[in-house]
Length: 473
Ligand code: ADP
Ligand code: GLC
Image (cartoon, rainbow, N blue to C red; front, top):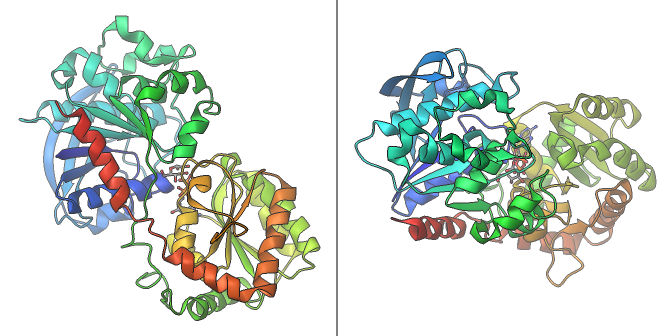
């Protein structure tokens, strides 16, 4: 089958979070199973662009309302990523360093989608499926069905995968002229709650909708930032498929970002060596348990709890614990986390920013990874942690609930708690610290057990393929 993945992110081209990881891995594994999966994304000005060779595949001209623009589709020459990668260049809109965060993001992503359907309209054949990831490409299922210029493409099956329903891409009706001439009787298929809602539109128009864990699929019906009734109504076409992890990138035995590689046999020694490097760099004590947090410092991840929870845990544990945080996000959380370095020097540190290499060293060198997320559609951090023998401390929600068991259960390997609250985080920290000091044999057993859990992509890839197959016309 020929599968076209459309996304705003794809690792290592451009990544802001797990969406990038998934789109960088899923097509590779689909190709390994004998299919022809490609990725199409915006041509941002990231390092990857300048470090690789490209061929021009197509040049076109189209419009975003009354603004006419030229676009170019380029293709990576050497199949470096294990799939064909196409970037769409639109000068003035996509030629930026960052993926998101600009005042004209709506125009940027709508123009990207228009350029894509325009290009697709010039193909001699039709692909078997268009697989859209999140709201940035959520208007495509509508566009190919109801935009007059593109309805030659209307019979191409579309699949939407929701990685995060918090962000929906809301556009006022005054921006409806950005969408190429469409059948105005179909306005209801663009709208939710009196605005154009690209995520809701994709849920309504895609042939099938998937999300990245079973529990999150359940949760969407009562907690999806306003779309609860829609998910209830459309439940028949929604499926949960857990993400996998890319073992070419995330494997402590081969990881190129760490100096001291290790495997299940020597996990304790390997971890300690990485921990020492990490602790030296951040002025922490490698003899004490190390709890890390990696991620976007936003409400969804309950990052706002961290400063108070760390203070409280530090006093409760009488300083017998280290915390290290890597992330960026809400400025007041960043500021509070930075202030704490003065309160607990030697026990706590933070790196504000995005650092792929450091994240690998942290998964390798830490004893525990904390994820108190309020919302977690799947979560990859906990799966990476498990692969590196790092015990996940997670709130029981979404994908965290589906991938981590509690050490109190038979053969359990993680620490789970129910509330995104300071009390629950401190309690979980107490259990972690107790395990580290009082029961190192169990800790080693848990590490070994986790590292052997199969979170690979193969199984999930098959589930996606089954869905495409069921949509074949
Ligand atoms: P989300 O996509 O919601 O942010 P996930 O758990 O699915 O959460 O994926 C997060 C991904 O982003 C992981 O690969 C994680 O290691 C990475 N990541 C998040 N923040 C940072 C950061 N500050 N530096 C490096 N990697 C980060
Ligand atoms: C989103 C979610 C995260 C998920 C990722 C990849 O960013 O917040 O939970 O793991 O997408 O699907």
